[in-house]
Length: 194
Image (tube, rainbow, N blue to C red):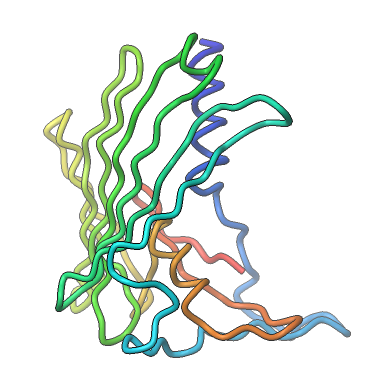
């Protein structure tokens, strides 16, 4: 139980804590900037190139817990972002895990069309994929290990998954004090992140 709780905490920190809920209406508080939608993305001038790989070490204080490498791939008509993650150090000794996560980003507007994962933990394997059908405003999550499919509503015209959101934040121009409102889906729901 402790191992499962620790891994859940670690993956939550590493792969995207649940986004904060943003109030749906009302003006911003006095002195705070108004949230704005993400700026349009110029797909011809992105701040990364095909094959860029960024490696992150996930640690708590001096304690190494995991390492993950993001790789961006230009597939011609879309971008694909992949993350390979694995436990390290004491975590690997007590609760070894590995995982591969992918997301597919479809231009011309910035929007995630697919997100999936293969995650291997002691006594648990997760293999699933989520696809977004924008014309129908519907997300479909396929849980391959259980042979189940779940659907959920997508209210927005564009959403990010956790992986695409990290690249989305890099794609826009930023000035001090800027804020971005992103619509992110995780598992089988849609959230707002500010």
